Picture 1 (tube, helix red, strand yellow):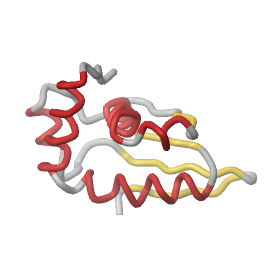
Picture 2 (tube, one colour):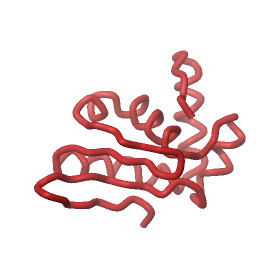
Picture 3 (tube, rainbow, N blue to C red):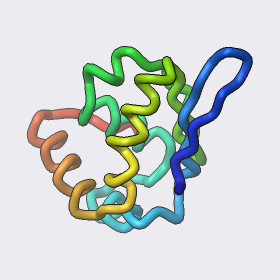
Picture 4 (cartoon, helix red, strand yellow):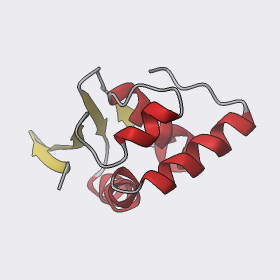
Length: 105
């Protein structure tokens, strides 16, 4: 799977290599670039309570969230189906646009 949970020096992260995902075409069609910053914004919009508890270290080619194992496991379960579902991405982006949310991609 594209999302990977990592353990390091007592910490935890979830990473996603951006690009080559099933939902990339939907991201591009919505006028965004399917990079790590886009996915970070999507997480912040779609799951704001969870995002508040995480730290992000994304870059162009990679999404990265750091936090507790419990929060990252929850994030992975929520985000995994979305990155493979263009329809889900379109719906989240449409809700974000309606709410005035701006992606930083």
